[in-house]
Image (cartoon, rainbow, N blue to C red):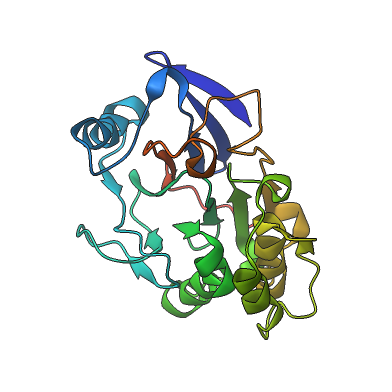
Length: 242
């Protein structure tokens, strides 16, 4: 993991053989809210900043569907591509971004996992789509869990607690500490259930609400409409099967 500065803006970058995962910060008010002119401008700026041909993103709806990016703006919470130098990303300001990379089949995905998508196991379902549409083997998938609200800061209501406890997938799993929900633990259970190896899972463990090291947006903390953008792109045709 490395911290990089581009024109005064800070990003967190993780490099793989053949791909790069990038998480934006809010340093110098870098904002990727696509509903604002500046947000759309910053999305477009990523092309020059990271030598990209295109940037794919979504109208996020807190669901459990993932789509293969075809150049259109679609309603979903997971986005997939196998096109080199075409980034796919998701917006967040407390929800968990999860970036996936199959190093053998050379396909990538970005997933937005709020509590509803987490309840619906969107990460697991995105991996199932990679298996179905790209013949991915979870053994070859690397996963990065980006900045999101940590369990200590994420108290939820009884209705949410009951939905998770009544869920077939989560009912016997340790994901709560009192009324506090751990999105990270939920996502880890999904990744491991899908067959992703422990050594291929990387969690940044940066809370959008309580961390003091990075400037980040937290909707729960300050209600401001700023958005982070987490994206991944293929940057090499080299095949790495190990």
